[in-house]
Length: 114
Image (cartoon, rainbow, N blue to C red; front, side, top):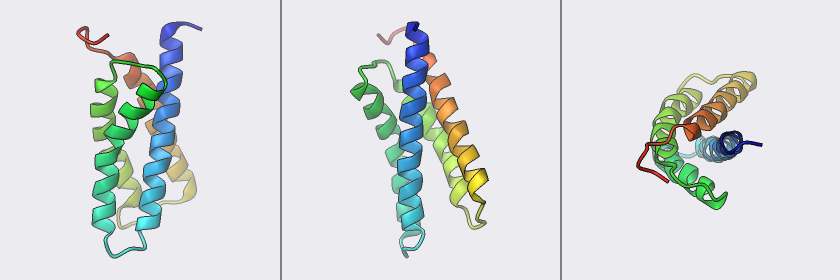
């Protein structure tokens, strides 16, 4: 397996796990009166989860994944928990899209990173 393939795989897995964790938090928090607070916490936690997950797997140079992945999660994740409920198939599809995007983002590294 090449280095890029391994990095893509790690990025995809880390992104999938982080998305499921944040979405689960939002699903639990949807019943609370502090739904806005829970939503903000999920959006703010995503870059940290992506960075920490990749570091745990021994990867460096994950700023692009953390920053762009966090922004993408804001777009994708908040779409899943807006006022209109989407079905389970749509939710699974959006989570898969985010995971694949995370894998692709892992391949993009600024030349200054190691």
